[in-house]
Length: 353
Image 1 (tube, rainbow, N blue to C red):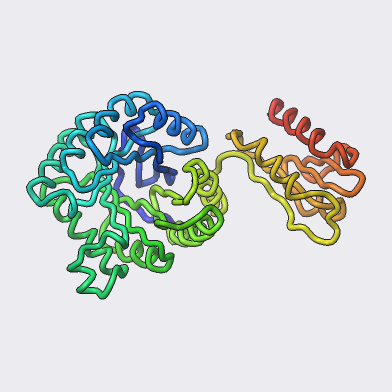
Image 2 (image 1 turned 90 degrees about the horizontal axis):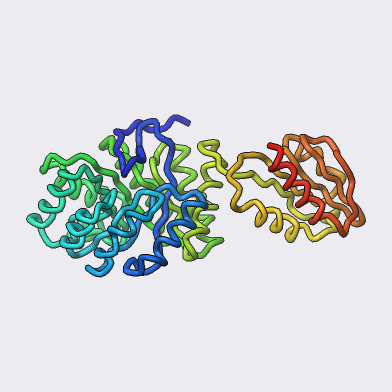
């Protein structure tokens, strides 16, 4: 796949677009006015692989917390603004690294111009974020609903406002809960400009359904070469978004972080609690950033062969299991010792590599 070439912007010290890696981001769900809780969540997200975090700024009390949040955050901070341009100005004054706003809902052209001019003085990028649920009424009537073309026209109208002020530190997102509509909107937008794209499926759903929709939608977009930053939106704690996001990137060979865990589906040969074993391994390795491959297989018949390229693995049977590396058996263990023995072997592997 060939990635679309875009212009480069910087959010804080983080390069976005061009040849920079596809960045993984998320959004806090703590009250932004609660600085301590927000920073705690940002820290957890950063440890899980979040490279850029967005915080909602719904009121002035939240905006007043931003200087301390910006100071304590290990990753760049983007302020999410709606309806009140004063919140955007206060966020810029607080030193945020980026703004996410919809110029159509913050109070008219004069107020938009004030925000854009202030962002330009500080070289702070603005993400034009269009969701299918926020398309202007006139465009809904023109296109018969929040269609991909309606979303793109909404975005281009907002971009024009910024460009008329000589501002081009722009990133664009066009999100829908419909996977086909999202893909088509980004495809159309990509043909019209070279601004970096932030991709995502909005309101994707609960962890399983949301991961499925995001995997399909983001996977297709990334395979098309589209996307410079991404967020997996789940109705769950934000940290769960990180696992899905990194696995999507890993599955396409675009970026790698942490171990890849290979586990087989269960079948009639499976005589151990394979789901529990695989989950225990995944939990043990959740905070590990080192890149390697772990195989957790359900029987000793095909285990080593199916996971021949794994750096380390386990194949379990009724009364025994085998631990192997690079497809070669290194030792056998008793069935009731599978998990503790393999965890010990994993610990040794991590210390030695």
